[in-house]
Length: 313
Image 1 (cartoon, rainbow, N blue to C red):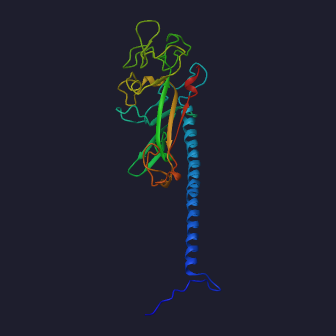
Image 2: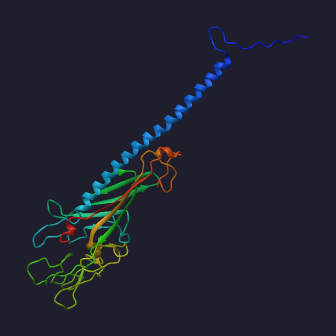
Image 3: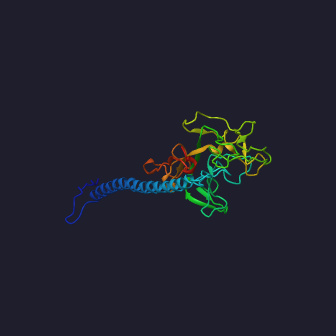
């Protein structure tokens, strides 16, 4: 019977044994994997920080744009007998201009009017949210008097407006026979003659009851000098309607009360790999499954007090 002799594995004079090489390679691979495990989150954090900074910049653009145009809503003459905001139309409409009569209030759209520098018809702008799930498009849109729709900022996934107004209705200061104005605290001055469908001394905000001064059609929402009150969608869509109930471009007379607009805007990360599943943190879900690289939606609220609508306050 032959006996097999097992010889010990020894290192050669100029090399390593196979076992030593395998052990060394395993250690090297383990260390390399650990380095990459540390680098990948750092890379994701770098991308997340860059995207977060970009979102802050986009928020600034949105805020600057809306503050600029909302701030000049109703701008008209600042002095003289006709000083005050525009009164022949509502300076602020809570919907897109040209909307159907049945859609006189939308939470994510607003139309603003102000006096044009060249005179003539007032200038205007409309802002609204375009969120098209079919194409994945989420944008703040703007259209001017020309009617052309222009995207302002991409990846806007939330937009809403709230309106705060004067608790006192428009009041007559002087009789219409007085040759020098201003005749009202705000709002359009009624005509002393008959202007259909209103009687003499009446319009969409004033009614004549036989007394010296026409009386307001709008209700009182608070004491004189009280804080502004929030105007609800119901109050802004129940009339009375100006210029009259049958007008194609009619608007609720309570819009003449508006003195402050609160805006809430929400932005998302432009890179889907930085967004997690749709839910509390993300309106539109992304492809990321690791929270280390998530960039949650950014939401901000700011308020604008149009200068010309607050003259005398």
